[in-house]
Image (cartoon, rainbow, N blue to C red; front, side, top):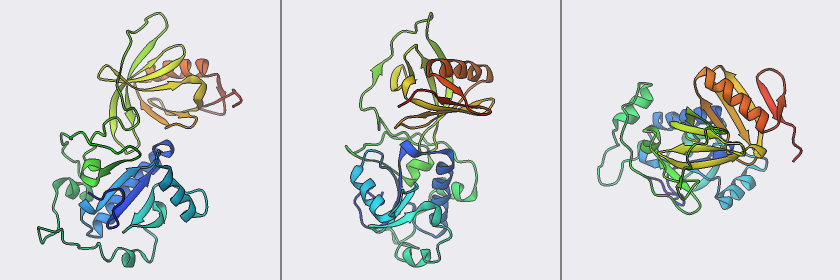
Length: 271
């Protein structure tokens, strides 16, 4: 795996606070682009730098504008926005030291069924992931862990809070599918209390969202909504139609959201 401060290999930088479904699709497109260039998968890593302000500073200085993520670093040098990679005429030259690189100790390029399936566009067999260790300021996935939709343990919540019993008088709880920053579809429970929204997994609180921080709610179709949080990660949620209807009712009333066109509600609270 390419580590955060290695100077050989490709790093795909993302910020989970700014991740969108379009951004996740671009991450996958970039991974496929580099793999098709015959770059070994162990030389490609993805890093969430939402809490790494030093790398964010470097990217802003390099971009000379507000950068769009994912952002690419190649062989220790920041290159630019991921959206520009495929159209770049210089990319083959930039990648020349990585293309067809022989992994030390094998004399051959790596082979992996997950990577092969990904490149071919086939359904990949689920792999039981290991819990990944993370640094204090950064979290990373190598390409296999990422494509296997592995679990990053406690990236944003370094402790597990036991969940309180459900208050049937005022709380509502729903089973949902949540899409996180690197595209993993997670089965979760969302509990809506009078003051906050609690994301639950295995009877532990994984995140707490406050109604006062909700800036916008979008309904993309009958089964999907996006909750946009002030200075936080957007929540992409899929659930049953009736549950979505109830969630919209709860969120709009408790977060003081007002309609803003069709299938969108925005905060009327002045920050």
